[in-house]
Length: 117
Image (cartoon, rainbow, N blue to C red; front, top):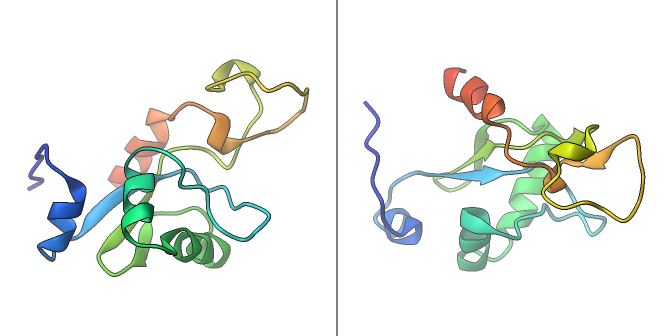
């Protein structure tokens, strides 16, 4: 049974619970994963270097659900890349066949697939 609560994720983590954070799967040139907004940013600010743990997980396993640090689960919500410019959060100033997945809107179908796995 899943218990859905509305609270501070850091407080849940401090109590020794597992937490699940939405991630987008993009690794920057400096080798760290993008964790620049929302719950991912909150946890990365709380645990410096979490972005490196996530990037290591992505490099070793692909962008898949998994434990990336002590009691922290990565939950992919965006594709690695996007081909449809209409599916982007903001329109880039460049034209491309492929756009980085972190620019795309959350794809609920990915969430449903990972929940079922």
